[in-house]
Image (cartoon, rainbow, N blue to C red; front, top):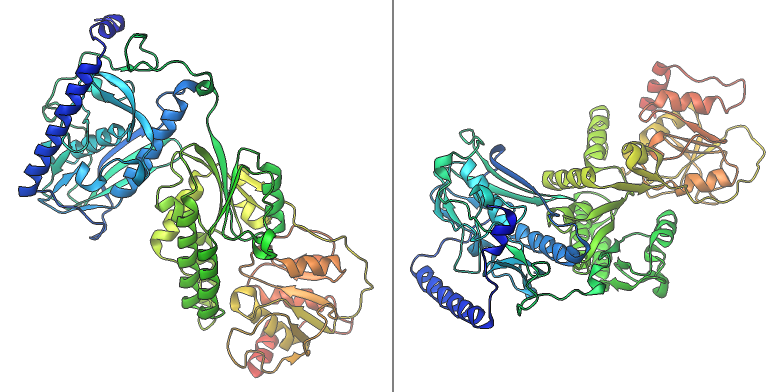
Amino acid sequence: MTVEALRASTTPPTRLSSFVFAAKAIGFRMRRALVDMAARPPRLSVRGAEFSEVAGLSQSTLWSDETAAERALQLGKVQNLRVAARALDGLVIPAGAVFSFWRNVGPPMAARGYATGRMLQQGCMVASVGGGLCQLSNALYEVALQAGCRIVERHSHSRIVPGSLAAEGRDATVAWNYVDLRFTSDHDLRLSVRLDRDTLSVRLLGGDRARASAPTPEAITADPPLILARSCASCGEIDCFRHERADPAATQAVGRHAFLVDEAWPELTQYVRETGGPADSLCLPLDGARLGLSRYAWPTSGFAGVSSVPVEALRRSWSLRRAGAQGAGRRNAELAAARRIAASLSKSLSPEVVSVTVAQSYLPFLWRDGVLGGREVTVLMTRLPMAVLQERLDAEATRRPHATLGDFRAPAWLVAAETEALADAVRVVTPHAEIAALFGGRAVRLPWHTQPARSREATPLRRIGFPGPTVARKGAHAVREAALALDLEVMPFGAELEGEGFWRGVRLAPPGDWTAVDVVVQPAIIEDQPRRLLAALAAGIPVIATPACGLDPQPGLKLIPPGDTDALIAALASMMAPSRTAPSGSDRRTAAQTG
């Protein structure tokens, strides 16, 4: 049968038939509610063992109709998939328990975040809140078959929905709450439901005995439908009461951009100012420009909307004050505050937001919550990725096991979420040279904001400035060893956090004008924002730093490898009077131990 014949083999619905359909649906819902009162499937939780074996996998494109007229409803469908995916991702299905789609997803209402998409009703693809969830139920049925699950309840579509598995008889339609998808397994399973920029991915994870396989023909229990579903926007039945008249405004491209920002670096504020448009929205913790708070002083003019979450921003400030300068308590406070602010700001992301520029601090939380799925993501990078950062600190900790190198450890799930989100991002924006180098062609490298450099007469090395704070990740141990080996005076600029007596044996300059030093030294393992180094270079003060500080080679800057104390001593010795020479490695270690 041809497509034309298939389309012609249906009759348009009438107001009377639609009324009868709605009345029947109410009756079916009431009957389902009564039946479930006697034997209701459990509401599953995310608690349980971790599984790595993929027992079932389904991947499908999010964008099945690229026409301009359908753009808004496609965005609504993707929004519905985001909301439902958040409800299902990570759920554990214990052996013998029945998984119910609606019991775990809940009713698709606008109050719960669902938007208007397309759904099949009376043979037609009509606009309805929650439309498009059948793409998810189709995928769940597919993975259940692959995992060898027993199908307790499944209903096929009455029409072939374009782009779905209905033509192959491997679909599962759902309608709240009486048309459900239910299955069970003899083994414990865990659901993974994720959206990236273009794809819905559904996995069932199990133990060693779980193996993914193609569903057998015997498992597909229903014949595929023979009639194509028709869209109410393009079916041609202009006399039908459901027919959607052409709207010139609907043919325009639909989509907006949103900026979810955190700390206002001058490089990043300029980028947002230059890339934001009059239809875009800005979401920030506090309106710092209006309140005179430099940390949040983002440009707010020229945006269609500006939203903030001042309560959460103040709560973060209070929690960090109580947490102390460093340690696990501060790390946990920072992560908890970022999670709360990210969740609050994400409420501003309406379905028509198709691209997001997001602060790195929010990124893993938004990714885990499924907020970024189906959207083009740009990341404002202000530090190394957590996986790289922790690997580097671990390597340094083997050399200095007693140093404060264990402060920056995040939960494994958070590291994995950031890694996945960065892999999906279309670009990363940063002024940091080392961070940009990690992302190749996806990196947008911004110039550091600097003042014009001034000339300064070179003087023999007597005093070194250390920006600090005094912790191992900033290179404090290397500075101490070099100062002891060369008998140099040190002026620390930051707080002493490594422990009482850290500078014992080192000649310390009293606090004063930080420019009254002969060289600024930052042999950091980790350095996100080298503002003091930039100021020193602008003031004509020589700088010795590592590539971890994020600066490009330039006049006045000497780059040395991180963790290489001998290289630091050699660089400092070259700036001393010609009569002084750098001590050998054994002499340096003896001096440091004596100190």
